[in-house]
Image (cartoon, rainbow over all chains, first blue to last red; front, top):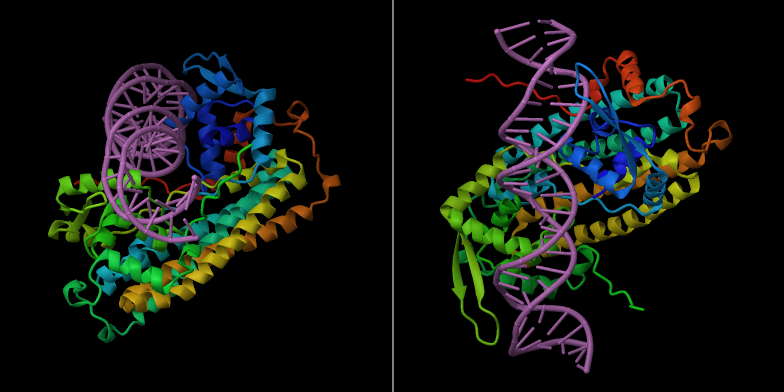
Length: 228
Length: 228
DNA sequence: AGACTCATGTAATTCGTTACATGATTCC
DNA sequence: GGAATCATGTAACGAATTACATGAGTCT
């Protein structure tokens, strides 16, 4: 769980309520992190129990009371320790790529339709990010934290570069798929009965035989660490 | 849950066991999808109950029996229906970017160290993907599915482009951070007491006032759909 | 009148990982 | 002799989403 650390990062700017934290998430890191209130509230409670933050009730009339969380010394060192550690690799699970991977099971035009929707989504998203990048300067002026603004800008730049790369890939993929001469391939479901390969085990065996270095493509192997 | 659909995609090539499915995952889509056996087995059972696959026991001596799953007509149409639907946007949760976002809380060189580790990781990963791309041709020849190989290659190309974009960003970010003239910024923890902004609510209010279009940067607004 | 903001939460459920359990066989 | 392969799972835990619940005030 590193929602904890993201929350700490914000609370480190100053005392806040869960409700406010949600807003900061949505207005600043929405492009690479999402958090629901129903997850934020219990996490804050848990962090309080751990001694990373301190809660004080801000009594209000006409409105529900606010629970304001402030960072403690323990929280600050937890935050900086975590920041200095190497980043956990984000886990990737990309439904779009799975669809393309199995794209041969689908008529060409249907797959292309899926990809074209993706182009539209990415163009919107790119426009949003570009807008955000021009905003961030003003943002920083409003708050008076220019050093922080540089770092914020970098995260938007990261989003932009990846978004552009994905957009270019999607367009190239559409082009490549359109370029396939269907006549040289069969569009029907694969006829396993008449193929020279019949079982999954056969395929895996052939892969092993023809591609000795295959495992290099897979995830990093687990290396035993010497104990003691 | 779309592990189900990824499994269906593989079973659509031919009947397989859970154990074999795991191997296919690891040797082909490992760069954008991971699946554990402990998740695959129950999911297969569930799919059988849904009628998407049929199980038959392959009795063996000396080894545990194999449970071979074959796709049904219902399974095939479930798969193609899913493939033709627009892709669910992958949700992003990138610990590295959170670290950069809060980078101002850390001494410059420590943040740069984190980024440099990221460069190394990406270079390894890029090499793996490039290797995979050259392999895929042979892969396809071994199985005799050239049309499928095109799609498989596209997914690796996607990984490569994104990986390169991230790598370039990381290097640019290191450069940018190194270029900061520290003397113009304070490196100490932010002194909120002496700043003209004190509370989170103040910041949010200022943001609203100075940046009316801010919401455009946030996640797609939920659009009410007219009910029927 | 209806929707949105403020402000808190709980409960149910899904999705996924890690750890645990078993046991013969085969490769180095 | 030790590790890896083959082949199945269960149990416990963690992370996160969705739905449910409340209720006054404000904006259109």
